[in-house]
Image 1 (cartoon, rainbow, N blue to C red):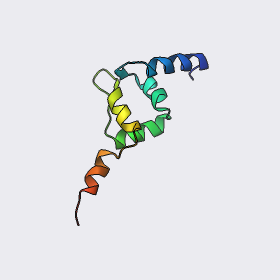
Image 2: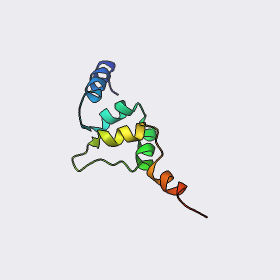
Image 3: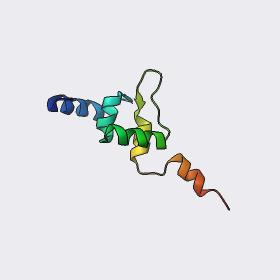
Image 4: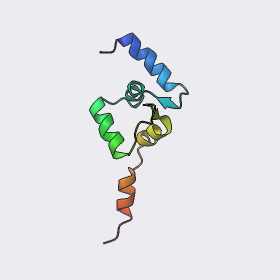
Length: 79
């Protein structure tokens, strides 16, 4: 379990200007639990890079509230 002081320090680092976030920092940045974060990442097709980091731009896109890519394509379908 992460100590409260460590959590505060990690949150301040995650909110700074880092372009890539470690998985623990991404959880804090998104304010989601592991399961919720995994579901959202899967929904928005966000994956870790080869170094094991998440791209902050992609996380911002996920948190912006816009529709996932699949939902955008589904709106364009005509029956």
